[in-house]
Length: 276
Image 1 (cartoon, rainbow, N blue to C red):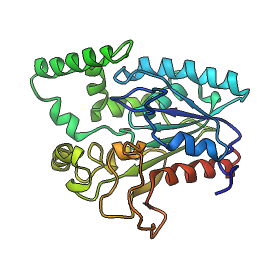
Image 2: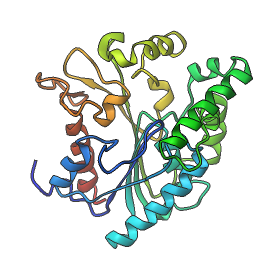
Image 3: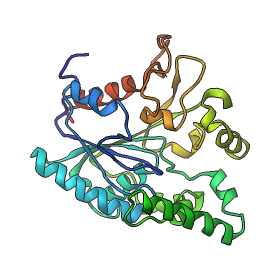
């Protein structure tokens, strides 16, 4: 690729998912931002809480979106969102009425349609679920979250909530909206996701260890991606958790990836080609 292949008209706003926060020293997105910048991209971050509710996090992301516009001098941003971050991007463009500030929304394994697995887990005794949520929120507050609400997050991943959310936040007009799905090839693809993968497979079929294809389809669905090797691509793999390529085996088609950075470079290059 050329040094300017990712020099888009509008800057990029990377919006992270649940369970981690944007840090300067330990970047949620691994090598991805530096690779994009090396090819001309201007990158900003959402800086929202790791387990904040979608509504509260969207307010934080919007503040940092406005800051990105101020610093870049641009009129809009291109949002690339992973997992729950895609819901926050959609809320900004939807009920919050800020679609005019967004040129595109690209979501990576976002639970647009809810999780059948979470539906099943939410049938556990409510006291137990609330306790798990409280413990998670407390731990994330210690790690830096300002307004953690893990229990709200659990509810927001149900299919019932997703149905309401989709009705209230339809695909915005005049914004390029697309979604991408990833999957593991087996439970052994990522041993850190072994148990979640097996649980999700029982309730919802093949997945990236957390979400299956049904759950993440939205707007212009661009298909299912996996690695060109034997291991597939897990939910953490999608944000370069290992800071290394998956395999040396070259891709055999457009939906195989040997290095997750290549996926993002191609995505942003496409945005540039579209004049965004």
